[in-house]
Image (cartoon, rainbow over all chains, first blue to last red; front, side):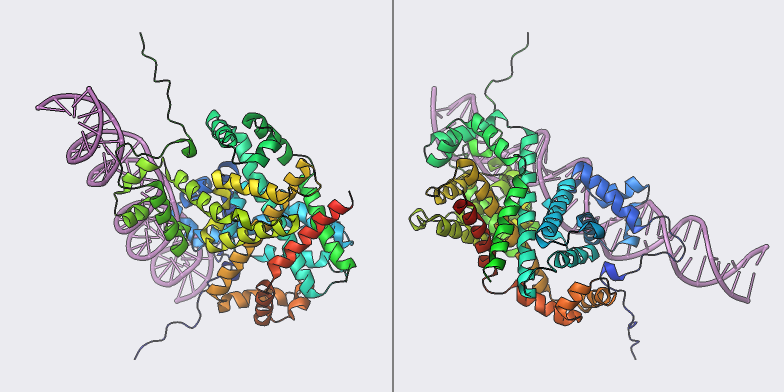
Length: 244
Length: 244
DNA sequence: CGTTGCATTAGTACGGTGTACGTGCAGACT
DNA sequence: AGTCTGCACGTACACCGTACTAATGCAACG
């Protein structure tokens, strides 16, 4: 006869697995995540390897695998940490839907800006407790608005989408800007402009690549651009509410 | 005396470097990119390794490095290929700004949907010729609109941001949906709901995790959600034009 | 106060990655 | 015919994630 495998399986999801601690281990998930975040913030996501994280904690590499099943789980925890920063402190959240949505959006953008790496791996993230809280908070922002649940859901998604997209593109441009514009790139752009295939861009940038780059940077980093875009989106939402 | 190093440096940007061809090589950049795209589309971005791409072409791994300086350049080329799909055929582009922007946005979303992998690595992409064409085309869409160049620039960015964000989140949800919802995840969600910390979500989902997941899926994949969000954004833009 | 059991730590090893470097072949030009 | 060099690619190295196994040391029990 076969013995049945134990009925009690270890949960496969990290949020369901208690942190180890029966005999007070030397580390905690929080410490590990903090170390990983520090590396990612300072040197980018690719610098985060299990070896590097362990090293920073003065632990053996494989020790991490006692706290976390694999690297993906560590990344999940890192993301949720960022989502924690996205949350607006409860008492600060405005009661007026438009302002409240603005607060959440701004905070979201700030959190992603602070953790540049997270934008590079947005597609890998799985939602955790803080992600759920973010959704709850968004619903709270719209609580007073005269909208159906379905409409609220779609509008929350709409704003998240804008914010993610904005943060992502802004970060890319910032990278580009920091890296500077090597003559090769200017030359490439100049050649493209001179080809005559882009009459509107040429008109827009004045036909001079180097000057055009400055112009674009000026526009991209123009004060309040995020807020202006957000206002457009909120206008669209408000219009929908009014014309109901 | 020292001999000066050659003044003529190889351009560091792939768009400026002629494809090799003095003695008719066995491969082309286009072939290499096509192979890489095929792998990425079929098995995801992580499956694209220099070895895999070379293998698919029946070439030695290091052969690729004759056509491309490193893997980043290959990725750059892959991205530009996707941006090529984003372009609306010139004669199809509407003369009316609102419709034209809609055409571009829809096509962008379709291209990213078709190449799921590109969304996972959005942050890595550098703009190439097709990216420039996309911008030119967006300017063309707004050519007839009574807006300043600055305003056009910001509005184009606004729409791109929404589209990127939407495509990204949609793809994530689709992954999640395809992978199904293992009991562990349902259990986690149920426990969170039961905690009482999320009254609004509980109300929204009816307190039952499994049913709630279905409800969310229904909402997320609801026909026309992308278009509705887009209309909100376009409404916001139109409002701005009207109130000028 | 041993001694035993298991929570916790960690080393080794394997199969993967990108790519620096060097070599060798063969087509084209003198 | 001889030389140059465009082109192809094998080898080797440092790094990665992690399966597996062994060592360590604390806590509780007899």
